Length: 205
Ligand SMILES: Nc1ncnc2c1ncn2[C@@H]1O[C@H](COP(=O)(O)OP(=O)(O)OP(=O)(O)O)[C@@H](O)[C@H]1O
Ligand SMILES: [Mg+2]
Image (cartoon, rainbow, N blue to C red; front, side, top):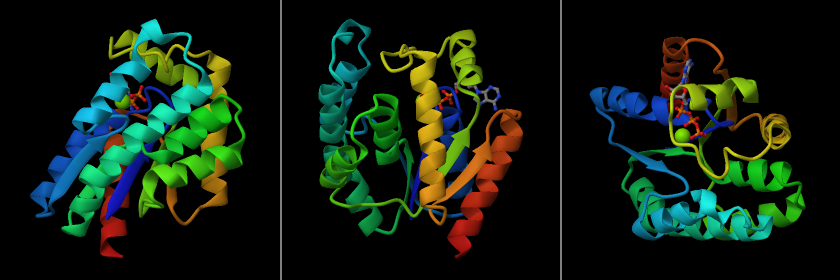
């Protein structure tokens, strides 16, 4: 079972995953959390380049390709072997982030971006993808107020982040059997409870 969490900045992906992992482990599952970009030595080095505020001159195509390089490595080195061993892998972002940010956000050709993503993942698609959905300004405010990591992607304009959110919602419409949307503007505990319920239901199937 391959589960991915998606959503705009500050929607709660990183803060929810450790609690989901603990919950599923208590139920007896073998669970492995990963994050993108990152999760391998090579991919974490690429993450540093992508997130570094010094790299303001980075072109959208450079950005897109670096994400795919990081992704190809974690798919082959970590995700595929763990799935083959029957583990549950939960990833903090995956290829849908590229379609949302580099595709919709940067307004690049979506078919070209989709082709790159397919190349990077070798076609590995999640069984379940949860969109933690919220007003982008609420999410960005959470990040500044709580002093969590502020990176080069966060610093894009609010209009960019609005296109990202709208892109996610279009992707949900196009592939409703894979996606579940969770309203993450509610209190953290309610969101966590809903995430647990959604994952348990999916595991039962
Ligand atoms: N439902 C919530 N209510 C209030 N605060 C929240 C909620 N969910 C998350 N937060 C807080 O918002 C901040 C950002 O959350 P988190 O880092 O989990 O988001 P993220 O989706 O991983 O963001 P990014 O995409 O930027 O990595 C954290 O300080 C987190 O504790
Ligand atoms: Mg995060």
